[in-house]
Figure (cartoon, rainbow, N blue to C red):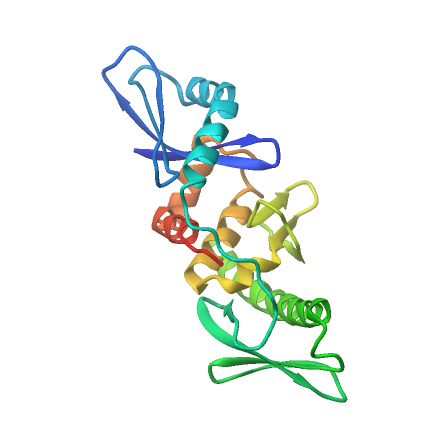
Length: 236
């Protein structure tokens, strides 16, 4: 069984492919939102990818259907006592009035010092600016560690951009040697952050989700599928 991805608009459809003695390609969307594809043994991966691409609208509808039964994460209020994530751990938010605005991590709490503690938009801006600064430093360090495994394959160390993304953890502009990473990724555990960065760095060598790409990803990060599965289960 191998893992593959096709693009559908701004989203990505990730699926597991298994080839068996059968006549046609079968696509199954499971209640846990995983996608399984079974194809004839003599089918090329390229043909399977084309089939999944054609069926992408139906797959998206099935995912929406199953998501309707899942518990929804309530919108963040950015008030004291609320739980927020950082680097895979939960912290309580404490918003305090202060003469100088700042955000600090102390013990099990994230303290937000604000001129206007009653202003939720201001609290959100302060918190996410803190996330962005922390994320930039963290992602740069992780990228350097990942690059140590990629340097011998002539993959250059990319420039890391941290930004807000609606539906992706990361993106890669291989022609410019740049990787974009979602600010929200700083909330995930370290092994998940490493997976996303390694995934995007592998795109510097293989821009598309081809068999060569996944073979290369498996070479430099053999447990990437487990990391990906863990990341997909995170509700931030």
